[in-house]
Length: 510
Image (cartoon, rainbow, N blue to C red; front, side, top):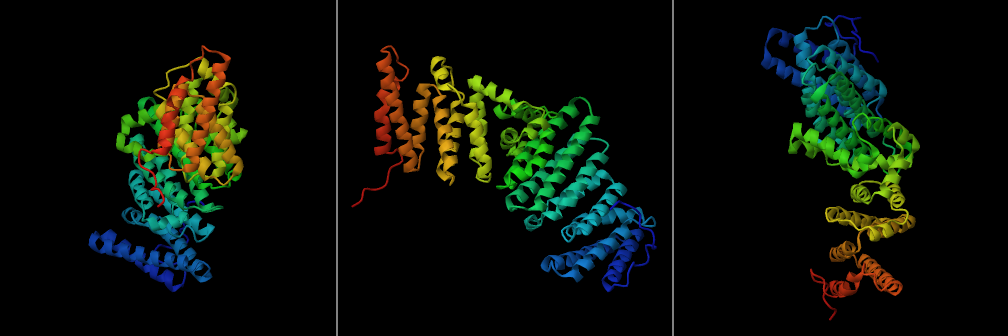
C-alpha cells in the first residue's frame, strides 16, 4: 500500500457508522482540538486515552485470533487512523504530538493480517515523511525497546524495523552517531527473537529480512560519505552484518538449506565492509573493524557485538555449504583452504575462531557438522609431520587452541549423531597432532585436569598411550630422535591425575 493522503472525507467526519470507529474519531478530534489550543495537560490525557483504545482493540485480536469480527474492527480502526493522520487539513502540531505514541500502538496490529501490516507500514512511513527524522529515530528505538512479552510477537517489530531503514536515509547530518544509537536496539530485538523462534517461523525470518533492509540503508548512507566518517560507519556496518549472520544462524535451527537466500544477501556486504573469508576465519579483519568502532564508541559499546566472531566464522562456513554464498561474497574458498593448510599460524588462528561455533549451545548440530567438515578440510594432509619437522613458537596460540579443543570435546560428548561424533573426534586428533610435541603434552594434561567426564578422560588417556606407542616406534627407527621424550618422563603425571585428581575424586565405596 502506497503512502497517500486519503482526503475523500474531511478530517471532521468518521468514515463509517461503526460505533467503535465513531468513538475513535471523536477521541482523535478531541486530541486535535486540545493540541491546537495549547492545552498540553488535557492533550496528554486524551492521547493516553487514544492509546488505551487502540491497545484494547489489538489485545482483543491477540486473545482471540480467529475472531473475524475482531479482525474486521482492527482493519477498520487502522484504516481510520491512516486516513486521519494523513489528512492535508491536519495541523502539523497534531501530527508531531501523535507521532510519539502512534508507531508503538499501531505496530501491535501488524500481526493481524497482511493488509493490516501494509496499513501499519503506511502510517509509520507517513510519520517519517511528515516529522523530524531525528525525532522519529528516537521514537522508533523506544518502541523497539519494548517489554519482553512483545518478543513472542515478532510481527510487532517488523514495521518498526522497516521504519528505521527509511529514517536512516532521511537523516542529514551526524550519520554515524545516529546509526550508532539505533544499532544496539535493533540487535537486542533480533537476539531475543532468534532465541524465541521456532522452526518454520516466518515472522522471525521477516524480521531478519527487514534488518537486511536496514543494512542496505546504512550502506547507502556510507556511499554518500567520505573520510573518517565513511570508515567508521562502514566498520559499524561490518559488525552489524556479522552479528546478524550469527543471530540468523542461531534462529534457523535445523532448516539450513531453506535459509540460503538471506545468507546470500548478508554475504554481499562482506567485501564492501573489508571482510575477506581469510581475514574473517583467522579473525584479523574482525579485529580491524572492532578497533575502528572501539575508537568511536568505547568498550561499553562493543559489548553489544558479542556474536561477531561467531558471525565471522559462520560467514565462511555458509560459503563451505553453498558455492552461491561464496560467489555473493566475491571469494574463492579453495584458495582460503589451501592457505590455511599451508600456513600453520593461520590454521591455528582459524581453529581458535571455529571454537565459537562448536561451543555455542544455541547453534544447530547441522551447522556444527559443516564446521567440523571444514576443520577436517584445513587439517587434511601431512601437517603433523610438518609440525614436527619445522617447530615454531606456539605459546601465544595455546590458550585459543586449548579452548577450541574443549569446544570440539563438547561436540563429541553431546551430539546424538554417530557420524558427527566420529568426525569431531578425527578433527580433535588432527588439531592435537598439529601442535608441537612438548605443547601437546601440556594441553592433553590440562584437558585431563579439566575433564569432568570419565569417558572423555579415558579417550584422552588412550591418546597418551598412542603417543607413547609412536615414541617407541620412533626410537626404534632412529636412536637420535628426541622429539617425543617428554611422553616417557611425564606419563606418570597422567596416571597421578586420574588416580589422584587435583580437585578430589568420588569417595571409595564402603
